[in-house]
Image (cartoon, rainbow, N blue to C red):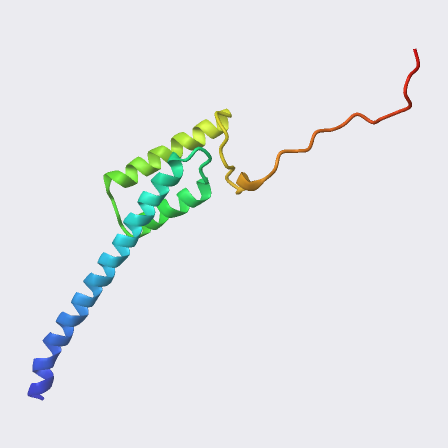
Length: 114
């Protein structure tokens, strides 16, 4: 019985340390995703889906930082400019890789004589 009484606090301390390490790793990954989201929004043709998902990861990890507010504000501005038609921006549904429509050619008919 005395061994269990001595081992219990040690086990609890180890479990708390493990939880702290796991939380720190999660927040580190969330900060990395947040910086990637900002980088994505700076691009000429940003993918808004990716940026929105990375911002959601940072929110889920519990990061409340100035970087998060900057990323959210940038996302709003990029979406707003996309609605206005400024620049070439990937659509919300992932239309970044679509090709432009081919030109319509006039049907060739018989040549007219003058």
